[in-house]
Image (cartoon, rainbow, N blue to C red; front, side, top):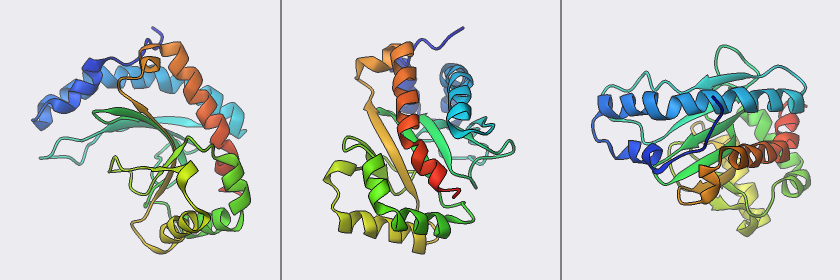
Length: 208
């Protein structure tokens, strides 16, 4: 079975109020699609990165009361886990799909990565298209249009990512749930591949 796209029913998952019901819907509706997406994208990202990558599908295992507001898959170079490594994400909130290159707070060397980004600001600006967005917290929907950021604002966000323990830096795309591309599996996968290929120079920079 190949990925056929997302439907409104997938987004409606996040309208289910109880934890067990929402988790069951995530497992039944969304995770099989993540498996299909991950299997395809992982091969492409492996080729782009030049080393083996692995798919991780969020289990939300720590949740005991509040149902998750979003869900995602991650692709990184570590087989055991993704949170302590730069990684690529595909995921859903109730009103959009996100495609991220993600540096989240569990990264043990995020100060060094932030310094690399700050020291290569020109490359960062040349790599990230103006229609992409950045997020400073993977738990929230909030995102900033990259094209509208001043140099001073970008530096401020990267310095915060470097200096604040819980700070994060994610860059990529938001796709509204109403966008027809989400209902076309082939077109969505092409967009995801294009997005991650565009962001690959930043991913590589993380390891230089």
